[in-house]
Image (cartoon, rainbow, N blue to C red; front, side, top):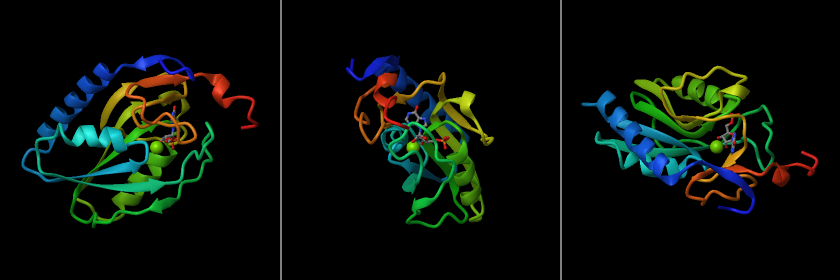
Length: 182
Ligand code: IMP
Ligand code: MG
């Protein structure tokens, strides 16, 4: 247990089992095809690394970086590309891999952006879904866990770039992000 966290929401074991299940599902759906998985930096890096090793079809991966929360626990509402793909999206079967879909602003933007590059297909895979705060609609094709409206960290998810290396998903204590004028 981390001192800045309230409780464990999802254990390492539960994450592992879910990642394996998602990998099986994706492998079945893309049998005979080649995949391009696109991880959203930095949060999705750990999930992507585990997920690609559970996928049985030929898979390449790349990363994009988008502006999002910065160090605050609130969304700015604007999305910008900070780092684009190093490879071509045209003609590829793409799965966007994200750590969490919250307001949906990031995924809504990214799915539209990648769809405009003439790919063969675009689907969305997220480890966590926080539907209670959705502002923009997002069609999630592969979903790990639906979570309540709590700020969570670990397994790649951060607050102020910290806590990413916690191996499970934990609820951050509100005292960490309140009383800071955010
Ligand atoms: P959205 O654009 O509001 O859907 O936010 C997506 C991004 O916000 C995610 O990629 C995360 O980086 C961040 N985010 C949203 N909720 C949480 C949370 O509970 N913990 C950590 N990061 C979060
Ligand atoms: Mg993120």
